[in-house]
Length: 73
Image (cartoon, rainbow, N blue to C red):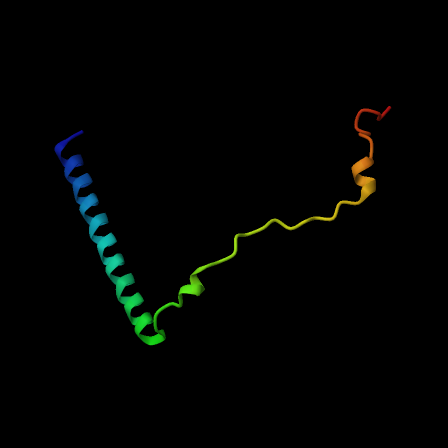
């Protein structure tokens, strides 16, 4: 790795860190403005029910059907 490659990598890392800092600052400003306009988030609004899988209907004939894949002759 040449000196130029290391400089490019270090510069890219600094740019990434600076962009991350700008994005975090922007999100903090947006959150503060939203909270000032709408008020704080109610505590019970953060709780959510866990997702559940639906209970699918399986007809009884489908459960008792024999495997026909081997009897194709």
